[in-house]
Amino acid sequence: MDEMNNGYVNQTEETGQEHNKKAGSSVRFIIPVAVFIGLVLILAGVAAATGMFSDRKKIITQAFTNTFAQSAEAVGKVWQMEEYSDIFADGQYAVDMDFNLDGYLQLEMQIDTSKDAYGAFFDIGYFGSSLLQANLYVDETELLFGMPYYIGDYVFYVDRDSLNEDVQNLIRNGLIDEETADYIRTLNEGSRNVDFQDDELKQGLKELAGEITHIFHTIKVEKAESKSLTIDGGKKKCKGYVVTLTGQHLADYFLSIKEVYEKNEAFRNYCNESAALGAGFSSTEDFLSIYDPARLLEEYAQEIDAQKELDIYFYINKKVLAQVYTEFGEGNSHLELEWNILGGSFPLENTEFILSSSTDEFVLSRRGSMEKNSYEAEYEMKMDDQGMIITLEYDKDRGDFQINAGFDNGIYLTTLLLEGDIDRSKELRINLDNLEIDEEEILAGEITIYDKPRKIEKPEGKKLDILKMSEEEWEEIIEEIFNNM
Image (tube, rainbow, N blue to C red; front, top):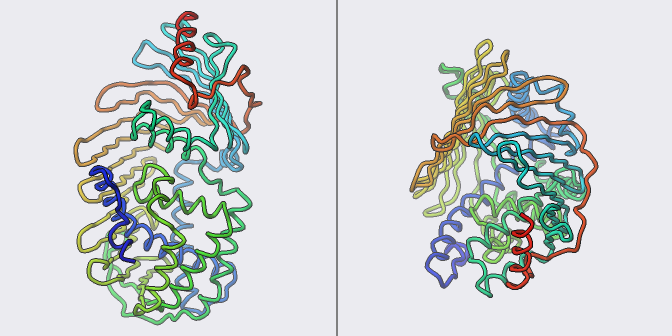
């Protein structure tokens, strides 16, 4: 565990040390909190499905169900998305986009997504004349990109299975830097995200629930002192309950995750990608080069088995959650978690999640209001000197919306403004009147979404593996493109 406490930092370059120290600090937050949230959600899910818990446990799990169900129903009514829910139900749909960029350039796109592949057609124009047409095809193993006007006999090709190795060769040959390589790897992994419709992943989650069901039978739930909390803008008396988890409970839970992680590939990929993203790594490969999740889970289990009991406090008002609170660890490893459900038109309209240690604090909050035809929401996330704020205003009758966002990375602030409306015809059409970044107009146009994809076809031609091409081959292709232009 000494390695874990030191952030597993073992880089020779100073920039790498700083990145991994920060990422290592994030992992101290991410892993325990993810495990805690996962345990609570599975606790609620198993209890709701089986009804096997005592009355006190049922009160807590029912409060979870009511909090999320009532909030989801309210937001769904605001956006009136029920009639379009089938569009995304099976992950297969088509999208048409027509944008005007800066008043001169036009961009038309047709995107089709099926369970097995992704296809796109691009047409870039200038004052109404086509400058470039291109076809993109992506599936789990390959990427193909064709430009029929410029290199009609060839298509660019990427072998996604060997991409990480190919990128590493480019770095060794001095053709790209580490930052560009990280971007390529992240782009590759980001488009291979875990599909929650995947049968293997579903089976892994089912196995995890089955592995830990016995834990819930032995969990102790007692009444706690009631307390007054702010709900719906006023002070309300809330009943308290304390769930006590022993070190053995938590150790068994960690080991259950480890067992499913090791034998179920889809579940393992999901855990790796989620942990890497949450800890701020540019790619899963970078994360796994420093951390061994299975070993971390086992070490956590060994350490936590000897720890004192963990008390999680739940406060409930009118069968809805009002607050969840716990703290665990000692010294530099001490973490405190507080989730306040402040209510409003629905339970989660105003809410605040705070995770703090002796040195860091992470805050995620939502503030909102809903009156007649007007719906407003503000989301804020803060950690150290970085933060993000997103505000949304929506007119339910007219369909008009405005989104403002600010992203502060501790060095500079980036702002974004998006204005438009939603046209609820047979298809789902989103009209974008204006998109601004740092007060500069970027584009306007429309997006239309259909519930079925068109036939996805691969670009045809001789494959050029762009990550293995020599400098001479690149020069020849660029010359051909230039001549055809």
